[in-house]
Length: 249
Length: 328
Image 1 (cartoon, each protein chain N blue to C red):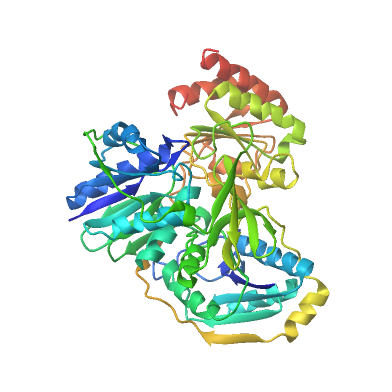
Image 2 (image 1 turned 30 degrees about the vertical axis):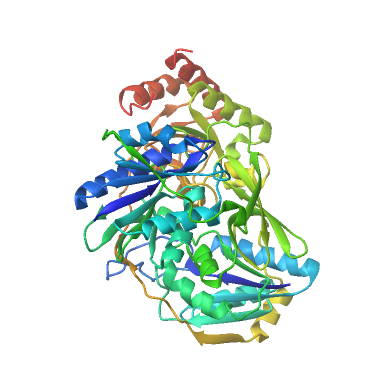
């Protein structure tokens, strides 16, 4: 089985954020970067499938040279091949990204193309299904459970209180949800091997960006809250405030 | 023409609350550009007529009724083809979706078919003749981007709970439309729908959420959280990632960066310290209450009201007081 996983390098959201001087991006000073959360799950799913049934995992990452660090992380987990689709910046518009990924994937002969459900930076969740359409492949989003058989697969999707069980033919594009398979930590052996692997670098054939970030701001601070009191004796006062002040009861 | 097409989401033949929210958003946008709101409803025979009153109340001028066997449940490929065909038929300035699980699957497919871009998971929109400008939380809510989308039709999906459904009543006329693709030809086929939990209120729709964290110490102590939720009567139960990772609660209960993003009127955090991962999923709640033994826990910085102390004493008391307040 030949699997491609499209991964994204994103800032670690545990860090303190500030807005850059351009007013429409994050101040890069002090940011740490890592593979986007859901993409880590997708890499893990791909590795488990190939460990079970044989095959190879390739990771594809679009962006400036910093993304090579993210590709090497996937190497250290066990990915066999890595491609950097080189671009000065990662567009915000999912359709611009999907065009570049589809151009790379089209002749790849992959049985499965995996994405994370959404990136933790843009929060868009659009690139997977858009790429699937450009490739003419069936697509299942937000997969929380996956089984593959001969030329077909069964997936579960969580849909707000219910789950769908869907069947699809291979090849297919899937976007992976949390909870399906906890990403492994890179092994020492994997880290050593990752250093020796080469990354194929090609220019990204981006589509037109029609969706752009005009400005970015930090969210308004919530008005300072208050400690109503300590222990169960504070409960009646809390209920009174919920009723008369917050008016939520 | 400057009409707006809304995909009005249904489940089991009933309109979901997000459908009313998105029709409300579309009404406001259509008024700004001088157009009509067309609400598209999928279902079996009679689905359009059944939804017309409710959709008209929130401002739909037309209900586009796509009725056929096989459309009573979500079918991504045929529905995307139908929505794209309608939007591509001319006269539409924009197409609005809910950024629900279904809408987040459907909208990018429609955008790709039409070759246009999509502003995903937005919280507000301003539509003009030359652009759609939208607010969208990025970096799991730690920053807010103002996006500019060009091209027609402009597609946007709205974060559930970000728009309050409002009345703008009119009598919506029902216009039938044949599906653009046969659901039985779809490559991805829904075999089964499995109910999660005991069909309580979903986290995305519950006005009140009571969520529990590690402070509860053991799975069986979630009974305290469930009792409190039951006292509210309109509450769903959520959990932190630590709790779902430990198997105390199912993964579908997880609120946070890698779980559900929720937006209730009231959020009660029980034994939750307030890791960024969790706050990312609930920080936009209207009123937040925190109960925690550590007065320095980060959750108290976000909470409107906090009680410091032993949750095992505080929560049963709160359950009792809420029951009284609710007259039960």
